[in-house]
Amino acid sequence: MMAGEGDPKYILQVENRRKNVFVTQLGEHREEEDEDVHCIPIIHEAPSKILRHHGKTLQRTLLLQKEVEHDQVTAELIAKRQEFKKQMEMLAERSAQFALKEEASRTRALKFDRYLKECEQKKERAMKKYQSEQKLNQIKKDEIHKLKEELKELKVRQQKLQEKVSKCKVYEDFLLKLIEALPANYLECGEDSLIRALIKRHETLVTANQNLTKNLSMLLHNLEKTRHEFGTLQEEHDTAKVMLISKLSELQSKCSALQGENTQLEQYISRQKGHFRNQKEELGRMLLAISGLADQCYMWHYGPLKEIPLFSKLDMIQEFILEKQDIRQQTVQSEELETSSSSLKERPHKSKKR
Picture 1 (tube, rainbow, N blue to C red):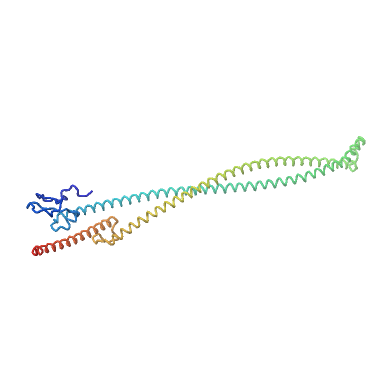
Picture 2: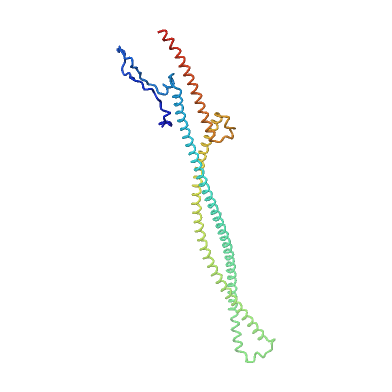
């Protein structure tokens, strides 16, 4: 839609002539015509060309036409400027959204890294605990092995002592029979007698046997207690091992899932970075193009070129283009006026020749 449509200053006023007739047929056989009838030929050219090439066109009409064209160009430039401003706002909004997404992804990556570090620390603690328990278990096994060896030695010694006791049983029986055969006052004999020495030896052997049996029972009791403790430790170790293996499998599955999510996030971030890089390159090309045009269309009253802002550069380019258009139009008008004046000068010569 034209900018000046409906404005009375843009309406072309033509004098209303009377008895204007449009020629619809060839007038070769027409002999007489009315004096007041004017023949108007059919026109196939555009109105702007007619007004431009016609010598009698008013300067006001041409000026109105140029003002309409100038308003159209200004409206188009304003629309382009608004479109460029909207694109810049959309680009700023997208960059802000991308920055927010990048910050969110960075926080998620930091959380994931912290979670991985915690998992590594838990794994290290579990491994240290497992190694310490394994060492303790090995120590207990060594102690049990030593106790078993000692038990075997004690059993062998017990067997030897039992064999000795069985061998000495004959002597015990002999001594018992001898005591029965001795008189009632055999204790009144001297201390250096053989009977007193045999009795003392027998008493020492009996006490030694009792002590050995007590030690053997105590060792057997300690062995049973150690076996029971070893069994409980073995059960606790097996349960802890199963729990640690299950926890380790869960942590490994979580770690693999988080690694997959991390790879997806890295791919998404790389795609977003590529898209943002393309937008940035396109914006850079646009700014370079505007800077190149501003360099070509530089006007001194705008100040130094490096200090001119972006929209002022656009205004300078617009002003330069409009100025060039006005110069071109003025040159075209001057050429048209020269051609029209030359044609007017040639017409009187032709009329004289006729």
